[in-house]
Length: 64
Image 1 (tube, rainbow, N blue to C red):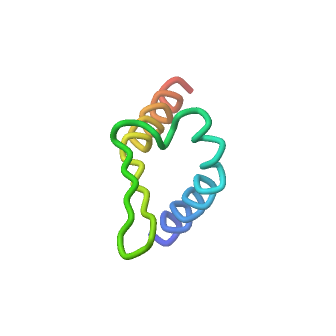
Image 2 (cartoon, one colour):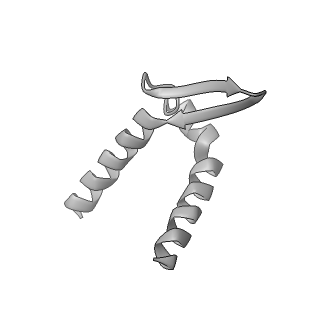
Image 3 (cartoon, rainbow, N blue to C red):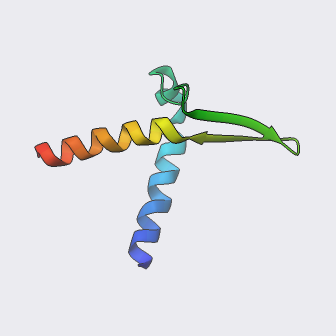
């Protein structure tokens, strides 16, 4: 279980580093992605982008 936790943390770090590039492609601005401000902090929940990226990854995994 510790290995999965490390993998998830590494993926989140990579995703946050690629976020400006992905936003140029339209990820993060889909209808199911939420941005809101709460207590003076900005929060971003990329629900639709996450679903789209996971479907692409599943398609690539199935194809390979």
